[in-house]
Length: 139
Length: 139
Length: 139
Image (cartoon, rainbow over all chains, first blue to last red):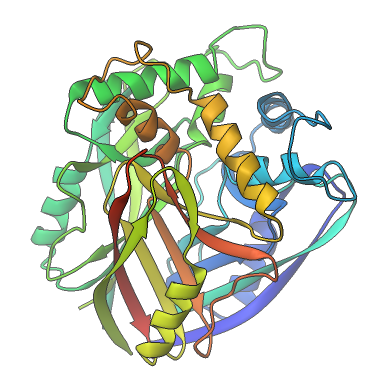
């Protein structure tokens, strides 16, 4: 049984869901991981991880709309007033999904269902470089 | 230290919370697991995992009502238009709980509190057979 | 590779976000953990775990306000009627964050970002002693 730690860097175009299933699967293959548990930790508070459907781009549009409506931008609504006024709603949106996801890896393969993807959900409006800390334990 | 991978299959009657604590505990016992970490991964996007109270059936009713109100069925509200119109709200409801839960197993026992259960939260209206991929690492 | 199981006990003053990053980091150091995966499991259904920003106390205030608005106390709104009427909304609020968080530990350090904290989010009004079951696997 071995462990490895490393980082993944993901460029986001601002507010969006970026499908990172491919890059995570590629990373697993490149590291030669066999079977084990892969844990991703998003070190940011204005973006988070999410597993949902990829069958139709309309699903992603519905997720974005739902979050915009549930946590409106509304400057003036929030106590936290940083320089950029998309900061406060970003925190609230991010906490509704996951900072951390642990993914079983079986013989080098992620367990994703046929229409299931792992997304990085960016809530800030400006493009960002997001870092994921990655831990693997297994063979 | 060993690892095991297998699947659990759960029948849901459609839209409901199914308490799967018993079947997961039974699985741990049947596999003879000692101490380790058990990870469940739901391979579906219209159902997800959730840990909540089991003391009173009214709690489950409140959870169901809350999700119905927060993400109404409202055909026409969503962009995604699959054959069955409960598909779009199912995705939004599912993403508010967990696709993956990792459960410490100590001497063959789940860590659930006295009134705490692990549920599979089905959001589709029709009965479904749901698959959970399971990974165990430990003794 | 070793495993350890123990409990952490956290006093909450009632309804609040308690930053537990310090106590968790201290625990990791005191146990002499090197590199591995630390899993926290909250055995309660009226409190849960959450990773969010700590840069400004206003962020915490916004989180609390958001949850109060999303799941209002409103006695009479819920089916579940325990002795204390903050019980039903507590369950709904708790299920929107995490019962379980797994944290990669690299050379004795948690992976938290510069302004990122791990919180215990207490939803009951009365002060409580909350127990977290902890599992560690690693060196």
